[in-house]
Image (cartoon, rainbow, N blue to C red):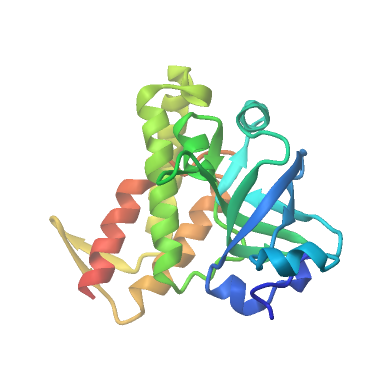
Length: 239
């Protein structure tokens, strides 16, 4: 039964689990520069697990949508206890690396999303979630939430956003790069505040433009992109 099997390699996990963004339970072993090494703990009956010999192996998990800084890695080491139980929600996979949302229980009814928490503290920058299907509502929902978290850090001026010059430099490069990319892929015609879409799919065009812009901003965060993203989602819902 795949629901009760212990996964010791990324390739063991069914594609269906990735597609459905299944949450798995695990035990943290250590945090490295490459990611978190987590032992998958399948959900089984205590009687069965007591006598069944489980295979050994660790999964390499990275925080989906987050470029973690060194202070961010140190914060994780302080925040997470050795052998701590946590949940990791599968979002994407690349080679042997899993890109996940990491969730830690805080009390009986409350859990913390570590991806968003790190961005709120200014301990990382947002990046595109590798392996996540672009043609899903989940893709847009996740990136919107990550951007909101990063915007919170920028507004508070915490972590990597403490320096005003860092924020100003980013904002200027953001404006210039996005304006150039938007103009280059001129599928939008504007008249005043109105936008008229051409026959080509706006969604597909925006996705390409979004990725081109991200490439041009490879060393910068996606924060502040939230306004454009929300605006485009608004038009996408209307379409």
